Image (cartoon, rainbow, N blue to C red; front, top):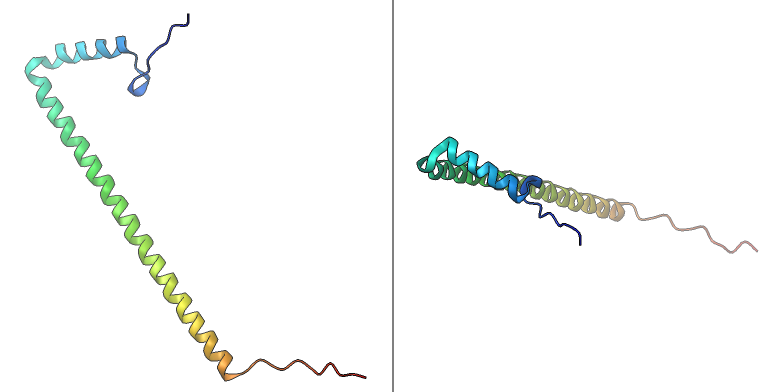
Length: 98
C-alpha cells in the first residue's frame, strides 16, 4: 500500500504545518495570534480590493477600445458608401466580340 501525502498550501505537509503553527504560537503568544490574524485578514482584503480595481480598469479600457473600434468601423462604412454613391462602379466591357 502506497503512503499518500496530503499536500496543503505551498506544498506543506500536515506535520510541517503543525510545526509552523507551534512556532507562531511560541513566537507571538496566545494573545498576539488574533491581532496577527486580523492584520492578515486586512491585508488579504486590501489585496483583493486592489485586484478588483485593476480588473475594473482593464475592463473599462477594453470597453473604450471596443467603442472606438466600433465608431471607426461605422465611419469607414459611411465613407465607403458615400464614395460608392458619388462614383458608381465602372460597367464591365461588352462581351459581344463576334
